[in-house]
Image 1: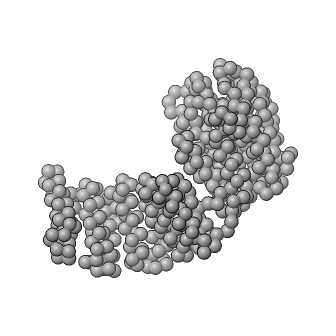
Image 2: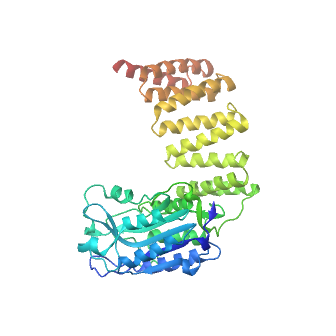
Image 3: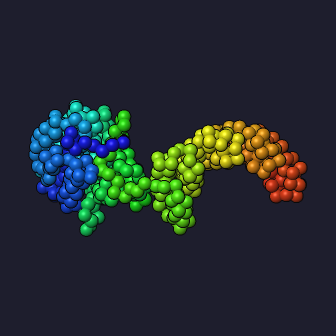
Length: 437
């Protein structure tokens, strides 16, 4: 993770906010996009691009002028070659992407617009170690003539070897720029993040962090989420220093956890997840992956993912926690067993009942050996194993497992206990399901 070297980099910022074609609505905020993005990239605290290495092309009419600027910049760059475009875009009747310039005409799309494949070829041939494409481009009205899945056609063309691409999602509408806003919506979030930073991120704001932020914020607003693709380690290149960064200390972790939990309890699940994701990353970076507070932050994050409806992410989070707890405290420590229980449970809730059953089968054996067969946690693992056996299409095995479990509950808790009765009802349910199969 490092900042791009300004003296060995070049950025070409292209923006078209006015159009001669009456079919293309104006985008007045594009002018501010260009000005503010240039100010960020040339700031001494960030990439510190010299003015001569930050080319701004505003309301260009002639595609050749863009080509000349791109070729000139590409030939003299060693570290980062960044291309940004804001404006309208369109697919022609063959599905090829065109970026619309001020002089573009929709009825003469191929002759008057900037073909994206030319940009792609120029970027792919540049000698830069890192190539970055930021595309704030949506489709406009009836300019879309291609048949089929326009999103697939669009994003399939954005893949450039050795390049990190971050693009606003396509839509049959002009680029979003709410009336009175300084920027278009996608670029506005991008600029705000690079300018103000985030307490949830590390010292430098990488391209991957930029994607995470814009995706989360725009998704929470009900807007299409940006798309990204990249190769190698280009996603770890940073465009700006994190203005909101402050190194975390161990003493501060409990307070950060408390605030994140309060956000979730108040109904701000997005805010809680963001806070916990940042806290987990900072704990991991500053305190180490096996520190008690790092493990606690990972547990809180995995729990929040599940409670927010992200079952697969919760299962993955608990799997990471299990790996670290197994090293730090042992595979059969009560904390590790609990994390394994949650990993298996969220795996099943996420739709993989067979894997959940397999995880609980192994866990049941380990829990019984470590805690004792009559321990309520051991019995809970056996219950979950039986449930996911039935859910995964094995009703006969589920019935047998619940029958054994009912006997265990009966001898431990008594025949009148609710858990014993519920186990017997489950046995009857899966027995009937097996008989009718």
